[in-house]
Length: 244
Ligand SMILES: NC(=O)c1ccc[n+]([C@@H]2O[C@H](COP(=O)([O-])OP(=O)(O)OC[C@H]3O[C@@H](n4cnc5c(N)ncnc54)[C@H](OP(=O)(O)O)[C@@H]3O)[C@@H](O)[C@H]2O)c1
Image (cartoon, rainbow, N blue to C red; front, side, top):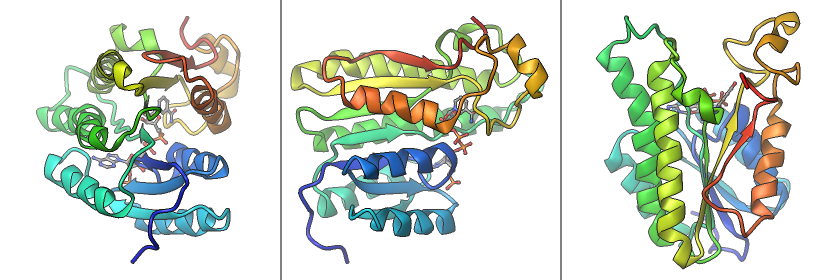
C-alpha cells in the first residue's frame, strides 16, 4: 500500500527497468518526479530501480504490463488513476527490435513489433490522456527521423513502427495543444549499447560525428524538452547525424 499521493509531478515510463528506460527514470527522479516504472519481464531490475530512486526522496513503484495488450494497459492506468490520480509525463520508451530480412519477416514478428512499439504507445496515450493536466507532456522514443522511410530491409517492422509513432506524436501534439498538453519525440540513432553497433573504426561511415550515442545524450534531450514549454510536435534526432 502506497502513502497518499504527494505534490511531486508524476511520470510514467514504459520499459523503464533497464538500459535507456532506467536512465530516463533516474534522470526524472533527479528532477523531482515521482515514478511509475512499467516493465514486462525485468522484475528484479524494476525493483532495484525503485530502491535506487527511493534514495533520492522521490516515490517510485512498479507495475508489470505487456503494452501490446490493451486490457493490460487499461488495468495499469486504472491502478494509476486510483493511486497517483494524475500523469504529468508519459514516456513511451518500449522498443522491440528483432531485425530480420524483410523477405523472411514472419507475421508473428511483425505483429509483436507493431503491438509493442506502436499500438502499445497508442494504448498508453489513450489511457493516460484523461489523467494528463494542462502543462502535461508525452515523450515517445523513436529512431532517427528520416531513417524510418529509408528502404531498410533489416528491421522493416521496427522502422514502420517508429515512423508510425512519429505520425501519432504529431497528431497528438496538434489535437491536444488547446489543452496545453505537448507531445514530442526523441530519436536516438545508434547508442553505445546497440545490439548491432559497428566496431569503433567503422562507426564514422554511418555516424558523421564519429561515435555512438550515450544514454546521457538522450536524457539531455529529454531535459531540454522538459524545459521548453513552447515546443510540441517535434522529433529531435540525437544521433550524431546518423546516415545524414
Ligand atoms: N539502443 C539503441 O541503440 C537505440 C537506438 C535507437 C532507438 N532506440 C529506442 O530507444 C528505446 C530504448 O532502447 P533500449 O535499447 O534501451 O530498449 P530495450 O532494452 O530493447 O527495450 C526496453 C524495454 O522494452 C520493454 N518491452 C519490450 N516489449 C514490451 C512489451 N510488449 N510490453 C512492455 N514492455 C516491453 C522491455 O521490458 P522488459 O525487459 O521488462 O521485458 C525492455 O526492457 C526504444 O524505444 C528503442 O527503440 C534505441
